[in-house]
Amino acid sequence: MGYVAVKGGTKAIEASINRLTYDRIKESEIIEVNTIMATMRALVDQVMSESSLYSPFLAALAIKQAEGSMEEAVFIMRAHRSTLPRLYYSNVVESESMLVERRISASFKDIPGGQILGSTTDYTHRLLNFSLVEETQSDNEQWIKNYMEKIEHEVTVLDKVLFFPKVVDYLREEGLFAAHEPENTNPTDITKENLAFPASRSARLQTLTRGQTGAVTALGYASLRGYGQVHPTVGEVRVGMLPIYVRHPNEAEQTEEDSYYIGEIKVSEVESFVPVSMKNEQNEEQLDFEIGYGVCYGQNETKAIAMSILDQCLEHPEASFPTHDEEFVLLHIDSVEATGFISHLKLPHYVTFQSKLDSVREVKRKGDSHE
Image (tube, rainbow, N blue to C red; front, side, top):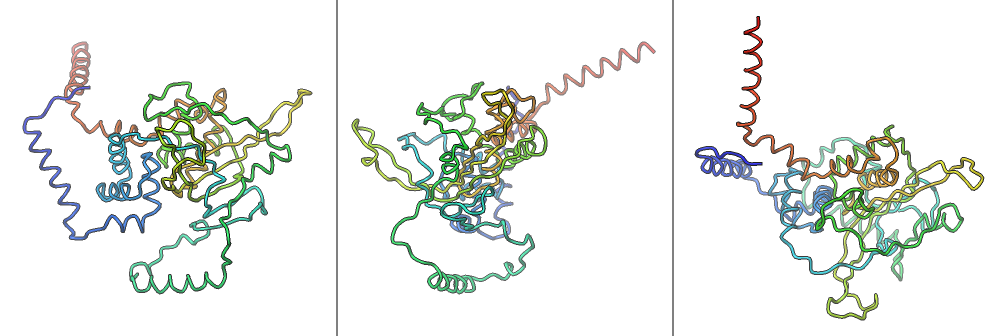
């Protein structure tokens, strides 16, 4: 689509950009990138997830540049990501290797390893904390000191790293969930290939995990509320750090032990248990369960749960609900595509609109001449 340049447009655009900078700095307050990283963890995690780029520093920088606008920060991050070379593909990660910070189950009160509430706002009162207005660095340091002293007295230090099994594995051992052979085909890389329909599950999961948090949550809620009536029970939510390994690109014969550790990423992972009606060998209706899966960068449990709902929905495209239509879901949750297409309406449409006005004038003229 082409647009006609407005006379003097370059100067006007430059003036607009200068005004944008003025509005950002006119209050003479500066927020450091490190401050954003330290105090706006949820916002940083959300930007990383929607941009498919794990870098807390760059996400915080994008948030500062965008003045807190989520859609603009994600746009900036996606643009930067497109300039980066793809040097390696990491090894397959098993989430059992996660260093767990939080792990809960809504399906069972007692789970192997126990419930770990971790850091969450789930149990807080949603009331404004006006004491934050007078917050000081010295008060925070004293609070941390008291907290660490309490931890030292109450927490037992383990002599080894503790890993937690998956809840669903115990149900599989009882024969309540079907076991499947690992699917080892190479996943679709939607950052290098256009999304095509019908989409593979790997492409669907990639699109969901980088989808706009609000859109994914809204469609998951729509399915839960009645457009598909998928009402899962959260089998397990786990939040923690996953180690990332890569193999040497020039060594053909390698084992997993030969891989190089390059760092870790924080993720939220959800497995939801969805009740479904199945027919047994006697052609009788019986209750069974399917698993919906969700995972995203950082701590964003609501999005991961909604993603797990949509994952299960999209496994059943035959259902006549919009939340089961992969084209409807996957093409409308992308934050850059959605905001970009909506925002393009602000660009000049002079020629097309004038053409429509001329058509309306002609119709009215002919109507008036027949009166």
